Length: 298
Image (cartoon, rainbow, N blue to C red):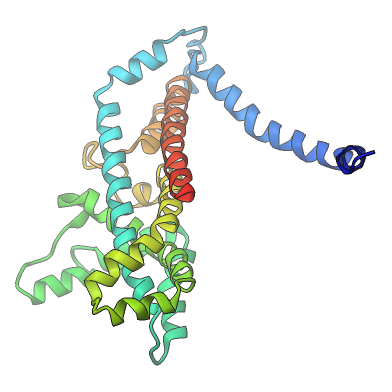
């Protein structure tokens, strides 16, 4: 009997021993994922209003049609792209910069690393309240005091620049995560490669372009995927600061679903929005996974 033939029964026996232990876990995960998805799909084809119980029955694709024809939907998708794209760009730029900076030797580096990573552990609601009331308040905020001293006057961020205010808050929360991932990757960079590049007269911009960024390409790809998934669900920062306004200036798809479900009490329309959000997230995840797989294969 060959070695392969002897290994197959052994593997089958091992699988038979572990399967009874794995079955409950797999069942719970399936229920956890499938039941909410099935209920969301079901309600998206129903007329279901939490206030008016007489609104019932099968709606077909009316919920989807109404949602896609609503001008607020197009504005929400645009705001989603602006928010996610801006935060991703800011976090990658500052993440790379901080990773390079904190990879150097200097006095107090351990404390500095701890401080730059700390904002990631602040709850989004607390973060939004701090920025809204202590930093961006046009009357008593720190930013208003600074701009007034410089002669520019106070800036009402959430009235004049609402999306910029939210982008700053969310980016402040996610820059530490990007720094942590990219700093870990920087520490695995071959120092002999850096020294060889310096001996070839490579300076800062050349080192960044030809040594550091190629080394960080894979971590950046993974970082983009992780952040995109979470940024598509940003809610607390919008709810606390602008409530989607002024008008629909900061209403994203996630916040639009909230408005449909818990403000307008339209569960059917909100469920249709949830299905569209799931489809959008899966499309984005598909392309991101392909990009990461391509980088890994290089």
